[in-house]
Amino acid sequence: PDLAGGAYVVNGDDTYDARANHLLGTGNLAAGWGSAGAFFSKGPFRPFAPIVISDCVGGAFVISNSQNCAASCANDPTELRVQHMTVDGKLVAGWPLEGISIGSGLWNHYGNPAGSQPVSILNGRGSVIITWARQQIYARGTVPNPVELRAQRVDCDGTMPWGEGGILIHT
Image (cartoon, rainbow, N blue to C red; front, side):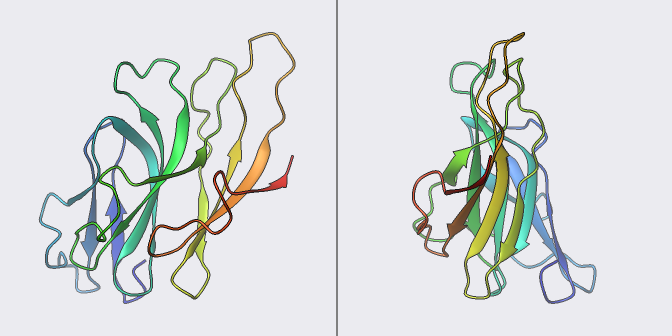
């Protein structure tokens, strides 16, 4: 929801140029977003399973697992990336086109993303807090590395007060 009776809609199902759109409570598209939506990520990052959360001032944070597929997506590590969009579907000034990396994602023993869905909430001060599960790649037939539950706070200007990779909550 957009906290004003509407909603944000995102796609990112293995497409390099993923888009978001903003539907108003009236059912109309919000001005500036366009009928095809606005880009929230461009190659070489390939986002999948994106989620979106309002930023409390009409814009939105888009969070997705992404692979850097500059050469090949096979066995490339995933990372969680966040993008910040304005009320009119533009990227917030100062944010990179591909968003910012907040930490590595969850992998299974085949080296493929295991479908860990990040969870996010607003903290009431314009920041978003994102939690996710992370597990390093391990060789098939060996004891798996422990799954970590991590969290990161991302402020509206893209700073991450909890440091690179966020904080460890539980293993």
